[in-house]
Image (cartoon, rainbow, N blue to C red; front, side, top):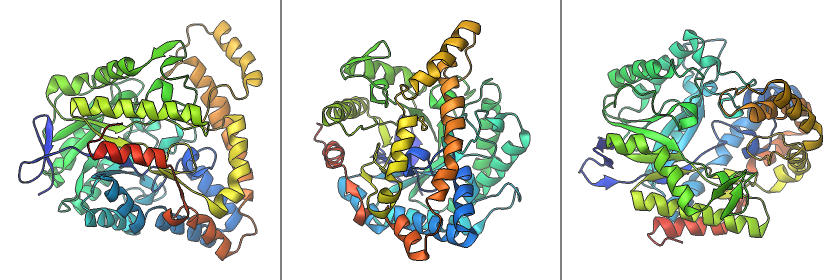
Length: 459
């Protein structure tokens, strides 16, 4: 028997409390633009690479990337740090395709099975997270959304497919004790707030019919911040909050200090955490922060402040007995404990710098890139449509999303794909192997900070 919820704690089969603390495996089975350096969304990126390499060589690259991105060395590193869980984001496209809905792709489980097994060998739990759903469950790139419309909530067909897919996933892992549980919908963004609650009711019932034992990790609406959509407290369930610090974003100000007119210090971080976890504390359910973590800049003085943000957040979580999953383990340099080097960064480094200059990635953008170009448009929108407040983050963010993170990002896709043209098999494999731990650069201050915290030595 695996973990279960007992009051406000997770416990193992012997009844001992288990506080899940670890990392998210972002960029692996759900690729993201800022994590692996491409523009726009995953499916469009894959299309551009296939056009450049052809089907067979593209499959060679992507399969090798999945193999290299996480292997035995990665599992050993995390276990040596004291990590006891890894949240594994998955894009539905590995397990079901749009042209053959309701047909589970057995071959798509091979890497997921492999990594669950590697982690289990080291006593590390996996939390399975469906990060991208058919039709896109939120408005941004990380649900593999090429637009700004979360169509998942508009079409029953997409919802039916997800219920069917989760039944298959639960049936596969129902007897796997090192799977801590299922995180069925990452950061839902239902603009009406009227569909997500009934959908959760339906999904929970379907999952429980297949697997009554595993813990469910359910995100609140509006990117895991709004828990008013839950009409009941389901049994054996953790309600997951995400807790990104305002000052830790790419556009964050000094810490302590002002970011976008708001003073941010440790007290503000704790107030934000308490607000985001009010539902969990009121219902007496476990507190687990599914995502959090600052963005690093390469400026030693700024990054030292970002480490302080992280240390303060970890101290707050310790004081409240909260579990957590830091975003993210591995990338090209923004947030990861380790980041890629070698042939991939040599070939794509200048392109990644161009993306940064244009502000083409939401997560790596300071909101100041292309200011001269966009300032008149922001002024026009504010002047002509003063009452416009689109879901989820308002007019300024919506304008940026449409121009920079959709239009400019998609315009960059052919340039990214062209960088693969003319490469032989060995060169393609070398690009993928740049993400293998042996060739990665370790962010030692971050690793040391996390290791000390996990060992009970807060920074």
